[in-house]
Image 1 (cartoon, rainbow, N blue to C red):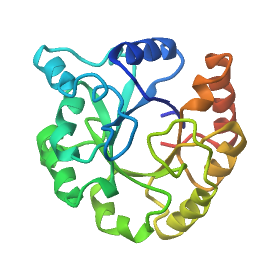
Image 2 (image 1 turned 135 degrees about the horizontal axis):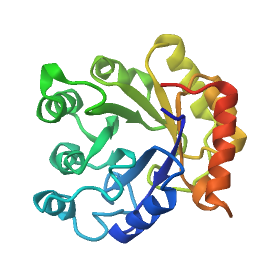
Image 3 (image 1 turned 180 degrees about the horizontal axis):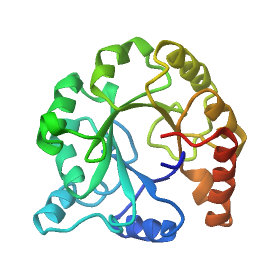
Length: 240
């Protein structure tokens, strides 16, 4: 699995389709950021258009565009993840990132996701991997109860989540290093503010997946920029 994961913050269904089409043939993994406009904003698709769209798509037998080409991760920035996660998984997402600050019932939520979508005891990461994200100002201690239940942890590299293009907060490097000292075997990914200038530092600190948004989409040549990011990742080795 590649270490560089393009992030899409879709403002509409068409925007999502267009961006996935642009990534076609360039990568195998994509993260789609879903913000409800309350827990995080501004609101993205489907909240920006029609909050029921994923459920309607699922009822009509539709899937995410290009879902046969990409492994799709949903970064669910919602104040009610328990109520809205199911349809996104049903649309063929294979990774679900939920924010620790978004619900008081995270352990129950993760267990429910595994039971409903991962067939409980037969749950395997290839079917659905669930991870937990925490903000830059959140104490690492909040993660401890959830670690036995998740496949990975995502650290946010920016202060205000949901705002693609916000500058990198270097405090995340210290959080990564502190976490790795305590839990060296738990995979980490960083989302937000990732650039070619800090990618090497994050990888050398033990991050296995870098979620890259504006640095790719604002580049003059998306394909060339992604190749340069992948070249940096190869210098530090690719992680699973």
